[in-house]
Image 1: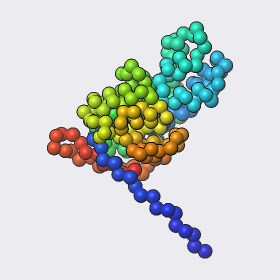
Image 2: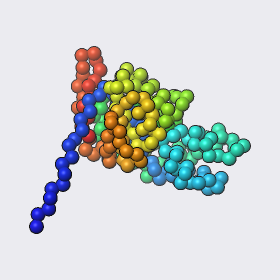
Image 3: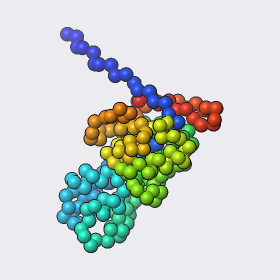
Length: 228
């Protein structure tokens, strides 16, 4: 008995001049540590852990602390404590499949990391996952307004000399996706983050099937062709 063939899924091809990456959940799987830290925070203050987890992903830790910590709490001290907890835990931090090869295939002067983590934590997590940190990074200290505000992505594009319309962002969290969309950038959603895809958005499970070619153009920049 024959079975019908699975429907053919055509590849998507994006041509851009710069690629911006979120870190946690996008390049690096640090889910276990993030969940552990927020669980300890929620239990300490009798807070709704699931609600915190639902809204904290991709958002700066300080913004989440201010949102949920009880009145009168020392927000700065709490944020610093949570940050130290995250920096001291690296067990289980791994790169998403295909992330290392994709980063290696992209010119360093055409990529940036845009993360809600601070610079120290970003370095620790990228190293723990065996990934090379791009030369251009926009971390929590680099912006006045974190995701979902587009400031970080716009700043990264400017640092790379790329127009937002010529940029693609890889993101996994609703706050980061909203930031990339507000910045006017095409967006590839990594994983199964909630929400439907709008025009100018794509979804991949990981980078296993992503390929890239990079060609120098006449003005010294790069023309990057990504096949998803």
